[in-house]
Image 1 (cartoon, rainbow, N blue to C red):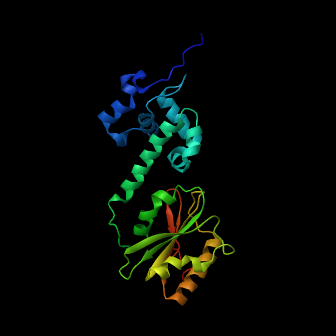
Image 2: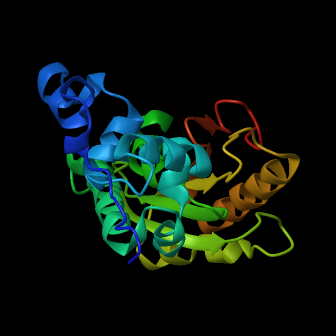
Image 3: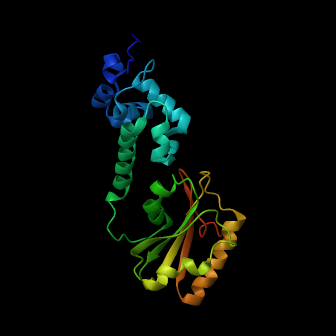
Length: 233
């Protein structure tokens, strides 16, 4: 008869080391990322308690940002995770995303680059591929829609500038903000970003739709190309 495998649970830890008890005593903001993941997962694997497993997963995937970026199917394949735990983790991440925008009006007004970035940073900062989107605004700078334009490497050879304005024209948008992410996490605009921005601005002038800004989103930060004087005159 083979040995029975053991899954180490939170209850197997010393009371002072249990993430749930530490959260209740110290508050959620005081405990580590690994402890928060351990609370979601509840049990470890043979030879590794849940806290050590959570630490190993964060190291393997590159921290919380890597965990956020990992597709569900890939997360299921990580040692010690599986579909049930992957679903719990992804559900918690999605709740965080929804909470990040819960305080916004259904059609928020954009007063600054920070306002625009706040709407898209959480999601776009974790995307694995480059996405180009437009935030469409009315005459009061109120958001009409966020339109997905393109997914892939951002360059003038593949982007049709007319596509950038397709939804803006259809919805009678007065202005728009261009947004795209850098999967590397570094929001520094590239020379190609500047070229694309100039082309979009010129097209907007012809259509009488003002391009207010172009934001480049990284993992933890963003860059306003207008504020940097890149592509805007």
